[in-house]
Image (cartoon, rainbow, N blue to C red; front, side, top):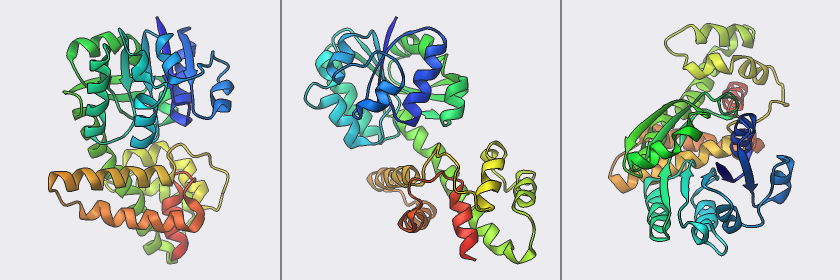
Length: 289
């Protein structure tokens, strides 16, 4: 099976590395060619040529603008869609996935969305949570590939339902990082070691599961370490919150907590932390105290 991957950012690179381990016939494309070359895989000249040389194409891109350029732009994926299956894994609004699905279907291809829960670490070990939207037959066609990436794959419904589920799952996670920072700001005067606080919170009902996974990184950030590699950057969190805001507005739903978290993340980004990992959110707010 020939698999193409469009978008070799942090997540796309982790997905490519995971699939390389199973000796899949892989090729890649990325807007910045050096990232694609760094995978040591065959590099397609354009998204169109990537699609032409693949049976299945996975895409993992930053936002709606990037997705539409790669799929619908000049020499885009749609131009090589005939007979191909596309698995779209980005975090965007449901309407964006539906636009892409229509374009691919009209061009003679098949399309599912499968945004995932988890970052680069789970991607490298095949422990992502797949939230698939599309026709069941197409999801079954994609399963041999997705099963190498996901510990659990759920069919959420038609195209768009996976995107909505991913946004909903991200919301409490994003809010947690801000609320944890505020909690630590309250506790600053007690003089406890950051590692001690992280371990304590991880044992309480107020500590999200992610705190256990990233406890060492959180403690390091609280201790002033500025070298932690970003797996989920603050600016990416801001992008997701903007997407949540837009989707909620379209549905006539109020998300007051999400909007307050967005304002706080905007402040952290303005302070120069936009490219930093999510663990710097609580460190930023604790230091303000």
